[in-house]
Length: 180
Image (cartoon, rainbow, N blue to C red; front, side, top):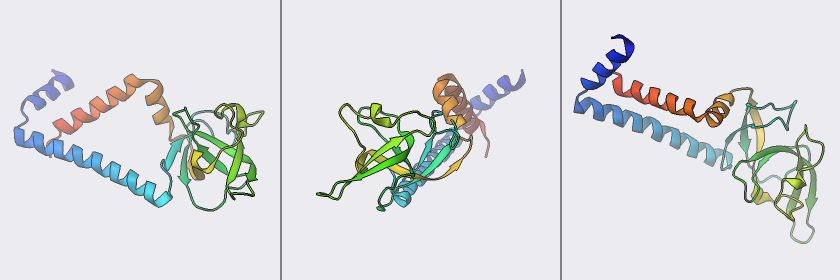
């Protein structure tokens, strides 16, 4: 019968108790991942402590598929720092360098202007209509480290959803058929 036939026979022979044990194990794995993510959010002060670079706008420093680790501290943002920010009305965060910092004398708030290292002009065209600078609430974090190319897994699964579903199905089948 081969591998598929053996897998089907294995699924048929699973008892209720074993099925519940496997379901609890899978639930614990998912819960552990969520706890780790929430812990990282608390430690880094960033709503998204890890992001994937999705475009080539920061080359040669960061390439598409690099994973960035973020930290958000109360320290003032300075020109030259690499920040990840959200734009009102857009879902996907952007990774770019701060090129100009503007401090408001009356409130002490800091506005920043960003630009991709590989782009010709600043990011004002990316900002919401009429917005000239980013405020602190737009910034998700500052890049403090990176892993090259590891984010390609995320990019491939986003661009080719069938691969994501096959992988999830295979992992689910593996969990159900394992006999621990």
